Each structure stands twice: as C-alpha cells, then as structure tokens.
Image 1 (cartoon, rainbow, N blue to C red):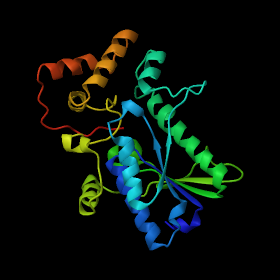
Image 2 (image 1 turned 60 degrees about the vertical axis):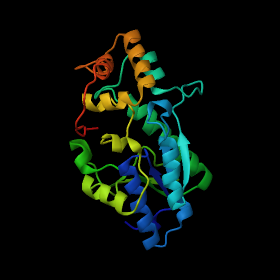
Image 3 (image 1 turned 60 degrees about the horizontal axis):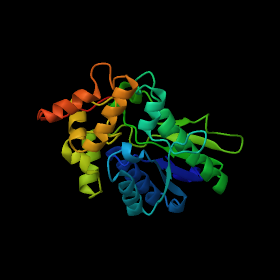
Length: 262
C-alpha cells in the first residue's frame, strides 16, 4: 500500500485490540513512506454507556500515542437528539439480531460516514483511505472481504473513497504479540477474559461473555433487563438478558470465554 496515493486517511477505531494494531500498522507504513501524519485521523463511533467504561478515553490515549487527532460521532435521531442504543431498542421494541443489525448500521456506519463527510468538506481531499481493523479469522463474512475496495456509497464526483483492511490476514497471536512487544495501551476488559471489545452486551456474544460483562457492569445490566421486560422482546432467541442476571446472582463461574462471530 502506497499511502502517498491518498490525501486523507481515516482510521475507524473501536478502541479494541484490532483497531489498535491497525493504527500501529498505518503509523509504521506512514513513517516508512514519509507520509504526512497530519493527514491521518482516528474516528470513533461513541456508544456512550453501551460500551465498556473508559473506551472513549482509551481511543484518545491510543491516538495520542501516535500523534493523531480523534473525531467522535454518535447516532442522532431526526431531531438531533443523541439517542443511546438502549433507548433506540426500547423505541423499536426489539433487540438487534443477525438479520436486523441496526446496531452496526445506525450506530457505527452512519455516524462514521458523517465524520468522513465533515472532514472531506473541510479538507477537500480527492482520494480518501477509509481504514478498518477487520480480520479474516473473525468470521466467514469478514474473511471474504476485499483488502482494498472502492466505497461507492461514500465516493462522489469530487472524491474517491477506498476501504482498506491493513491487518486482514493477521491472526490473534500476531495482534497480541504486536501489542505486548510494543507496550501498546489496551482495554482492561481483555484481562477479564473478554475476547472482543464491542458493546458491553453484544447480541452476538456467548452467554459466558455476557455473564462476565454483566458482573462488571451491573447497573447497565439492570437497565437491559428492565427494557427487555418492558418491550416484551427477548435479548436473544435462545436466552433472555434476565437469565444472564440470574446466572450472576447464582454465582455462575466462567472459566473461559469463546470468541464470537460478528
């Protein structure tokens, strides 16, 4: 990848391990190719209380380590209100699912696209590299993604936008070796056994992960239980979020959490 073929680089970051090594890899290439680092921006789609505590601050610390500016974005309703994911779930009266992944489209892709549009209006680049930390071993769907592909939805007559996956072929061992060998700051949730840093209560995560997440986010768990009861729709088809709370109260022991497909 020749970074100097682009006028602006936007790295999407969740604050998780894959986003972190993506920033590291882009920075490595930028130094190697003498690319202007002021043209590299980190974009974080802030999920507020629905994401692990300290995530927003960690994204800033990770970007600061490499000298990159951070732009934050949140989902807004038609009146401009910054609606949380749980409020949105309550209004829609249903939790996200594999077929209805509005948690991704409305709370990540949409706000992230607004950041890109805002920066393009401000900087007027003709070619933009839009960077993601997706890895092939994460899921069958992500394994089929092209490493570099034109984003036709975000491209216009004035600009071309290309999605790029610089760590697509990295495995988890390489990710963690890079983090540990370079003393990069990562989220404490990983030390609790969580294999991913997504929403605290991700609808794709296994029961054991939700128990661990709930044990360390009891107040938020109670809010999810209340919403589940109010709308009459289960958190998952195979189990309710209330069952997660009951497991915690009964002293459920989690030995190891399996990774999950996004």
